[in-house]
Image 1 (cartoon, helix red, strand yellow):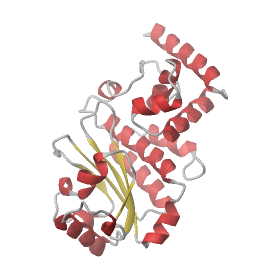
Image 2: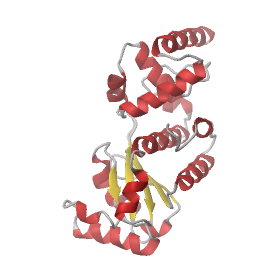
Image 3: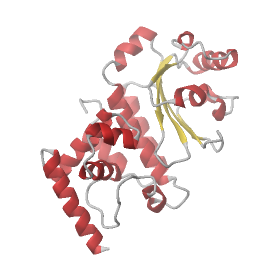
Image 4: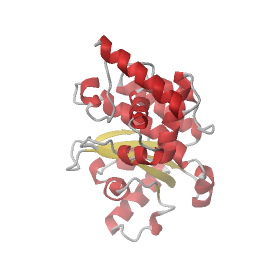
Length: 256
């Protein structure tokens, strides 16, 4: 991370024990960065069971959250997409009803320009993500997020994955572990589940690019998780980190 969010703030997100605390911390961080409007919305594969957290209730007033164009269009890929009335004319695929929703949301809430960051965990039936907005003009907003999108995506990914962990069908860690590619022993070390996942893939000989493809996240996000793991393990490179990780994993498995 180049300064948007500090690692101790990421660690605090990782250690949240309930959804309300996680949302409050995420909202505080994103608001501090400059986003006046923070919307987190996920649904199941049938666009049902919507889960909505938002500090801009006017955006969805009178409209079911599952009908938000964000879900139908922005979440069709992992790509970040500019959102809000300032960008609505960029997308010819939007229908008149969808354009009306976006423009009405702008008028009712002041959400003029934003960015959608889709999220979906491998193995999870839910998808969705974040729509982060401001009252800025198109040019002002683009200048605000230039060079920061991957860092924003990483922060939102941490929140999304923690949200999934805390709402895993009431089963907590047991259900969430099934959505990770890495072994996740009870006697786990200081590494977070996300960091363990990356280190596990590295220990299997995957490159950063291959790990990103396996996790369905960007190479920048994999690198951020790796750097955090290196720091916690007290090492400076991948070879030393993998050795440390394998030793910790063996120790944890022996203790179970």
